[in-house]
Image (cartoon, helix red, strand yellow):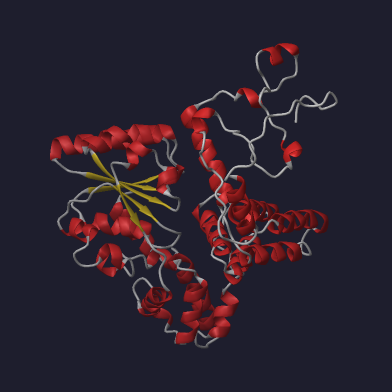
Length: 452
């Protein structure tokens, strides 16, 4: 099916309203001003018919496929749609061979549109790469997933990534009004009057998804027509099924909401933190995943500034495992709001990160002799344990000797912050790091264990 066959198919009476009303040209598109505004890179490329290979990245219903088709409509290139789900490498190779022939024989470029390009496997991506490099085809891919993770680096480096933003409620209301008044492709023949408030509710509930908004409108308008009344709030409420929250367990929606949850706690906003937590749980996220994030956060972002935080998170996890849902929401909510409200420090996290980097840089440095285990006579004859000073015999308070490998002497990985309980830890370490009494080491008593 070529572009024009597809356009005719979308105009058929049986096609959903969202397909019939899909904009056919760039001028008909609503939203995406950052990409299509006058003087923008993409706008100039379309006007001058020098379409680059690109990946359109955005949420469902934001206009990725529409923009790709509109770009093809404005171009003199041959447009070939290709489904990453329904088609495989053999079909792709046939398309690429035909594209190369058309360019060689007629100088005609081919725009290959790959819907759901994130579903492509490595073999498909490898098959396409040389053809994109030679300019035999112009690739336009559409994806709801982050291209950095879904597309291999070699292919991605040869394509521009354009972020498609969710449509605003204002944009959606414009599309809904257009559909209600368009007699050729829309619902104009129904002659249904409508309340602006009803359209605003549809736009709000659609969460930026034009497809969902138009499909709800079609159902509500048909219902209003059959009852001989205007399209009002009652019609909309009946047409709106319980909406599925945009949150899957693998895609960007998942990671975006998790990111907002963590950052809200880190930013000391318990109201936002509990909102994002409930967004995840209401969308079907595993509560134990949320609990695990709370446990990580208590150490990574609160740490020793408030040692109680980890206890609260552990207790919430244990309580949830005993209670289950829905009662288990109580301890999870308590932990979430506590962690978001308490003092923060990432000093412990920074400490192990720095220590890890030192291990990677210097490798397995030798353990100083005085710290080695002297478990046997041979060990002791080699000097293992010689010079070790037992802190408890010196009051247990002084940092009485070096414990790092010689090459790392004086390095500081744990740097407590002036936050919460770490203020006291910082002051104590500063005293200890100033040096304790320098006394001759005492040999351990006979009953003392070999390892301490």
